[in-house]
Length: 119
Image 1 (cartoon, helix red, strand yellow):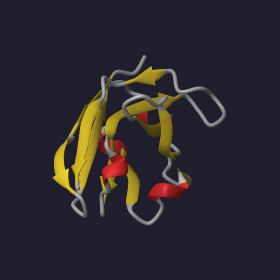
Image 2 (cartoon, rainbow, N blue to C red):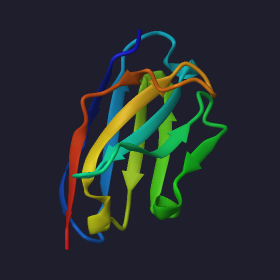
Image 3 (cartoon, helix red, strand yellow):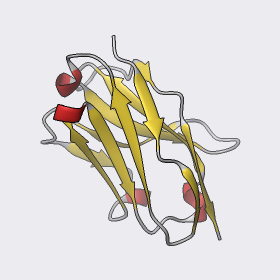
């Protein structure tokens, strides 16, 4: 079982930056694939990025490539999402999620953190 707690959301102007953090409990964090999802008002929750347990593989949706970076520190049981050059379209609740391995569903979820980008 893994418990996830996000932090770092807030209000920022377009062009600004935020770093989201997700602290995980559990001794097997380093084996989990970790992802960041977001849900904008009136839209379904969708993947933004994910990273493999060893950090050897990452994935980003096209709209955030070159602006967002996902990385993790397994010694601290924490995964991060560095968000630069934020746009109003990035406004959403951001969720951290964990999957036991590649190809498995994301079964573990945090409570979410609000990111609001003003124009």
